[in-house]
Amino acid sequence: MSPTLTGEGEQASLAQHGIWVTERMGCGGQVYHMPLAIRFDGPLDTDRLLAACHDVVGAHPQLATALAERDAVLRPALAAVPPPIGFEDASGREAGELVDREASLDLDLGTGPTARFRLFRLAPERHLLVVVAHHAVFDGMSKDLLVRGLADAYAGLPLPVLPLTYGEAVERENARVAELLDEAAAFWRDRWQDRQDLRLPGLSGVSTRAAAGEAVDFALPAGLAVAAEKMGVTRFELVLTAVHTLLAAYGNEDAAVSVDLSTRTEETRDHIGLFVNELPVRAGTPSGTFADFARSVRGELRAVYRFRQVPLARAVGGVSPRTALTPVSVSYRGRDGSAPEFPGVAASVDWMSFNHAVRGTLHLQVVDAPDGITARLQFNPAVLSRSGCESLVEHLLDLLEAVATAPDTEISHLPLPAPVEVTVDVPAGPSSVRTEAEPAAVPRAGEADATPYLAEVAEIWSEVFKRPGIGPDEDLFDLGGHSLTIVEIIAKVRERMDVELSFDLFFDEPTIAGVAAEVALLREEAC
Image (cartoon, rainbow, N blue to C red; front, top):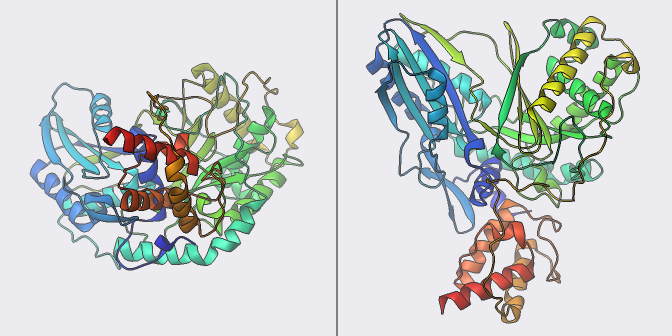
């Protein structure tokens, strides 16, 4: 058990820790920027709305929080640069262009800002508020909370007082993780396989790291709600079953699909912040009727849900930092449908504003509201063609239409595509392609002698892993290491050897020998 799971003083959550390390390794960037756009029609009081933005930031300190490592522990702190809240006359500009511009601006987890608010005047009685927050301090449910808070503050209503601080919530979540960790490790032992093989139409490679992304938007069939009720599953479980069925039809055997699961409790339901954990769901080979398979997927998802607060990398070894656990992932968010009420103006929200980035090869984002289920298939155009993604959407809609009409149809009788021939030779590891967002190996002018430093680095590793005799070439992640482990090693090397290791090193050389060689090189360069 890592000593940083519990302790005195507020700590960053385990989810925040994973994002922070991934960013430090150069694999995050815009994929973690979460934009939200609200359009206003009518005589908006701009000063009043800007004041409401300040009120929401005051009520939800996470929006003004940075993350800093001190003594091998990642801790939240008031950001040196607070969230900028401003106004701009953008008459004649396109709303989409403004959203894209704001989503591309820097957010800095170390100094701030971790959120931005910009109100645009498009016409005398047309305005656009764009909010962009870093995923380390924001999640899908936070969008609803933010809009609700803005509407209440604009209306002059008091914002609710949170029952506990974010730090207190993290402490309780960490305690829950500590309780479940051994059981979670046993649960995932036979379920988790870090497979990168994938068959999709138009696929030329596989990635589980952030890259520039494109998207295809579509609406899901209206009859899904009735079909799900007949099957005894939720709409989310139905859609997830359809994704597994489609992947199997393409020729993927027992593929894992990562899903975003909420870790919120009754005490944190009103918190703006990060309360999400991504976990893989395997479903086996589809058989019987679609309804039978959906109930099987439901059972597996419910089993996974028990461990929703335990990051996979804490429970198993071999999971290197990445922006997606598996090449294909799904996020599904249900909304109650209540429209924001800003007195005197009509407001509409784009709940799916796109940041033009994708965290893996393919990501399905779904927002389920009483007025319909909207979906977006985000894809990495460097490894998946647009025509391939459009074919996938067509296949998914054909399948869902058939299921909505007759959920008890045998899977073999459903309209499924033919298997896709294997055209990609995918090597082992978290990604088969290197994108601009991925760290590249730094060429060395020469090799320094690492021998004098091997013993001291090995001693540090033994302390961190609490086990003697680790071989010089044993992989950190295969030993069960994760983001907390990397931070501890870097801190101890800094303290004892007066050398600052780069996080990128742990992508290329996550071994004792690799760290010792880096120490030798840095010492030589310092002379």
